[in-house]
Image (cartoon, rainbow, N blue to C red; front, side, top):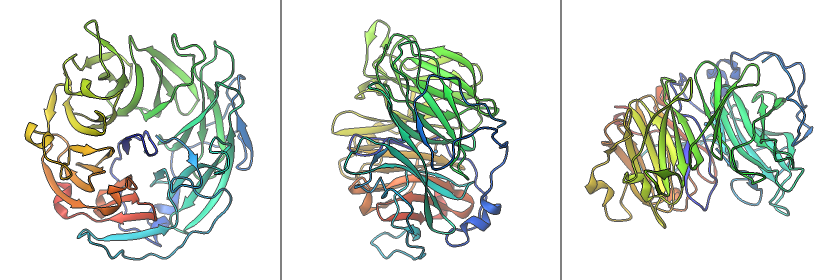
Length: 439
């Protein structure tokens, strides 16, 4: 689930693979085989859900073991701090849309969703501060209840709490850094079932950025790993051990977003302000080996993506990557083919489509997610569309009024149920596109 825009929460999420459930609603948890998730050990040391977690320079806590920025709770994207009881009623929404829409949980606005855990999650803070401390909240989709977990607090002028991502069976939160120039950011690994902090992983310092505060991007890698990007640095982390496998420097530019393709072979990184052929451009995309971090391809200095305002948000699919980026008040979503990252879709006529009807050319804001053979795109033109991920052919599309206000967040694709799960400002919804969506 990947969004680009300035007025709403930015989030970095991995492509959604096949999810085998039959329906949504009150039986959501049962259909997910007890809402458990595999390949997790029992931590030998972890923060309790009520504990406050701060940036640290000490070694990571050892254990046996879908990118969002937190916001104040007076907006949709931050629920009130403390335990709440959302509306558990499952209803069909009556609207002008022709695609059926069912409310799973009303009155919540989660930032990410873990289908395997049967839950959605948010980082929220009191509206009186809007700068933290940040409380992690978990909304159970089966019981329609919300509980509060650990609190994350920055402890220095160069420390920040940001990024809430679901990857490799865990939640990942950028939970601070110290004042020391020689120490990089701290990444917190959280169990989505218990909200316990499994460990804090000390990442290496980025090259040449000193004490600057920089955003983190997280993507699920192959073989129980994740990739973390910040500044001009990519770090490969072993999920089970919490150990840094390797650190890969970026020659120029800073990481804006990451995504790994469904095969786990290719890592894509969108960069802000890199230098290409001696020319500084606003944005570019790299393709790397997802196992080693070895660079395989890069966009050229005259690529379509260099028209962006800073780096875009990437969503990897079979055969390439989609990049969504702002060009000012407008933006574009384009497909770059694997191997050489040459612009391949959509057609020039679709990119030039008059507003506000454009699918790939949009106003202010757009978000994409991949799952089981379909790229789902929503933009602030009010368009919700299913697109062939490798050709850019629009299979089917719908007008969604809530999207015009930038309120629709793509949370998950449940292709076996023929549904897309979204947050629309009033709760978690399941939208059922026509069968043509899935190819």
